[in-house]
Image (cartoon, rainbow, N blue to C red; front, side, top):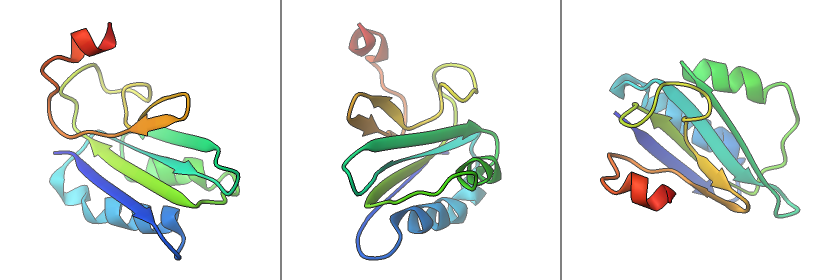
Length: 110
């Protein structure tokens, strides 16, 4: 089952989101990802198939200045389980996460 966490506030948003995602692990998932905005309003995203620990390991390789952050654990309903299909889905300066099946996904892609 999917889970969504977001944070915009005075504490480190990435730490808050990762803590929230870790509390949702019991629900089951096959991948995890986050997107965040830095202090220059640039959008960054990271996503990994498998356990949340895989994402955390990836994030530990760089320093991050985070102003706002969203995160998601995914249970595949469309597409195979891989990094590309993990959430968040990002295009340009927009990043989204969603829960559940999007019935009109093919028409939205077109």
